Picture (cartoon, protein in one colour):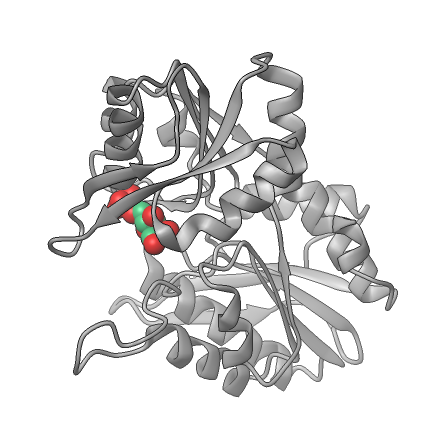
Length: 310
Ligand code: R5P
């Protein structure tokens, strides 16, 4: 078994490699003057099982193309099998036609990864579980909720906690965390009047006097979470913590979080954000590297990955 990293999140790849007591494959990933990406594997990998680690985070198009070219280079170098380890699976939010005449990017990206030559995909908190079915190869979707549950139990001492989904689509995720913490569930009724804009219509459930744990898969512009947190406070919540797997954190998101009533935003390192998050006191980053390393080990040894979540 060998590990290859793309350029999107080398810090995470190094942590995974350290955990597995393995080295990253010697490779060169560069750009031609016109921006085309060039991948070269600088060591023999013939007959090896290779795990290529690459998040499809910003710049999403470059990082996706890097992933595809890495898979292609591995295939042409006679790797025995190739697992695409995609901590943050970008392009997943367009998973159906919400209005007529739009693309379904999650399906197209799944096709591209398979066509490039991947034999298996490992990812974390897919935006929608059914995206696994867009692939005809095995997909292991790892969950961040146990990491969050451990952090909450250790750091939040309140006896009056409630898990909150910031929109109806996030209900299952919030319920799963609520189950691990043995607490109830509330749901924010969010509408999107236009792409990138979010509006809270209502809060389903009683949050008065409670410590609210908002949980989601992605924080992008921060609009969803900041508006949801405010709506909870307006309805009498005592305090609001936020747990989100993928810190996309585009544009002014960090400032919005800094200025918000959110007591703490906890994200994972599926996306390399250190340069940005260091500047905000109410943002904490937990590493997903141990979970990913353990999943890679189990896939390599053909043992159960789902047992990790029992
Ligand atoms: C949407 O369904 C996702 O789960 C997130 O709620 C959304 O992507 C967050 O976006 P933003 O931070 O831009 O509101």
